[in-house]
Image: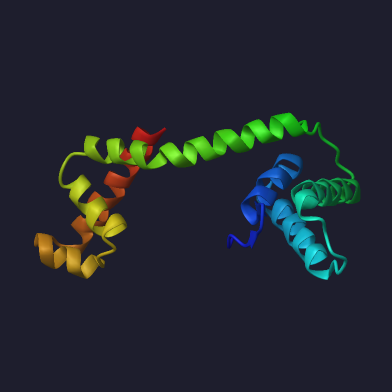
Amino acid sequence: MENTHLGPIDQRSLYTLAYEYMANREDTEDVVQDVLVRLWKYSSPIVLKDVEAWIRQVTRNACLDALRRRKSYRLVVSVQDSERIRQNAQAIETDLPQYLKAALNRLEDPYRTLVLLRDVGGLSYKDICRELMMPLNTVKVYLHRGRRQLRIFLE
């Protein structure tokens, strides 16, 4: 999803709020798209200090409309809980580079080297094979194992 900037609130914030209501990616994307279309069509001027609250209300209403349409209601989190969840998501996003670096440092060679060359450095498989003098299948197997270990370390 592209991060379209809407002034004080961005598309990611809308997505996070909508996801708390909809609980699945497809419905959330539909609601956010609907909200963005509504905002685009809205032609009256908006008082700048009220934009964020207004957009959040439009998003909540769109979510409730979608839930009514599909006739499945679920307990929705309060606005305070939604804000807390958004702050926690931002904290994780801020700390992720640290966790990723620590997890990469735990990987043994050749896994660490392969993950760094392919996923961080963006080298092609062909270039990695040439640089490390390894057969293609070995590179693929080791890269798969390295990524799997990295995923375990990050959990």
